[in-house]
Image (cartoon, rainbow, N blue to C red; front, side, top):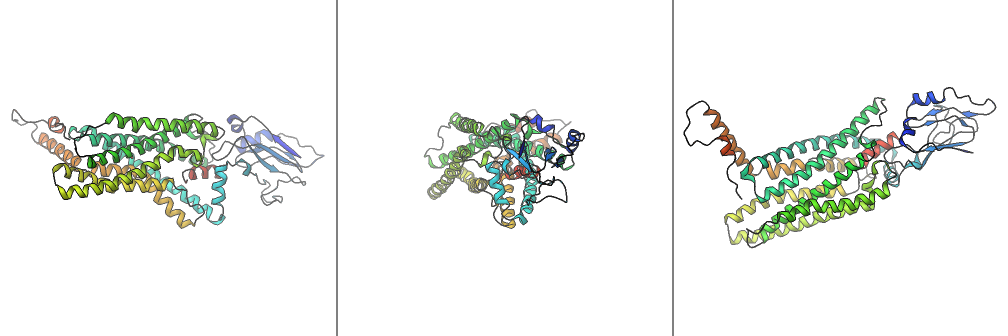
Length: 454
């Protein structure tokens, strides 16, 4: 026979059955018939299971967890002897708690990950540990990137001498990266706090991941910012390409067109992707596994195209610049050469980084191969903002010159404080602003860690 606990398929139902204490309170006074054998009530650390007649199967709704479909059913088996059946099909005489089969709950994406991960059960835990450590690496990397990007934006906005067309593009790229990095940090830190509370025995269902609409909104904004970042990377390559290949360097700067492409284009792409994802992922908590679906390529396709186009731009830029340098060594050519030198380092770095993040994690491979892929990919991804700020701002000659000029003006201002000054002495403000010159619990934890391993 089969018992089915329909209950209400909403979060409140599971909140009432989420702890050992609540489970005990629910069934402690339950009187089992003495004329028949029953399996006792039990708590499997996720769901509360009622006393069940011998020789029957009891089912109830899958819990709200990442990677599980809560419209399906988990099940337990009670043997003819009135003992819960274990994983191997025999009575679990040691723990008396038996085994809950959550396999029917897995979403297709989660089932795929678990199949690959548990091909070798001996290495599965090692890979889980690697995933946890790479999450710490990501939080550190994104924090450093966020600080570097914000500091760079302050510098670009603070000094008038840096207000040119190239830095206008830099600033938009940096803003897109700041939005993406900030959302990632909020989500990751929130998940870390929830997981830490759970490890301490505190069952907490709060947090962004467990807040409908807010969670989906965060991921929509994250994907929008990530797509905008790619678009502004493309604009960086396009602008530099036009500077080198167009005969007249003082070509009209179509900034409004760039803004529409950089910020407007991602709105269209994200809206289409979001509408399709909402339709097909509405039954899964926070759209878990959306980045494993084929329609995620609505976003990934244009992003990959941008990477390839930038590589084409870079090759043509180098070719044209070599020819121009042989013919002339004007100041315009030298200025472009310096910009290209930064691009030669940065564009391949960004391309390799983002292509790695688009590849599927080698879950079937050895622990060493998985660790190498994980640490490399997540290091480059999380420190991407720092590398961009370093090359486009901190190592830029114009930026260093502006900072040095400002520092010298400040020193002059301090050393001259309280003494008689020449009537036409420039203040710190005047020097700084000179005229302008031309980035289940195990299942739930694995889902949280391995969603990004795509």
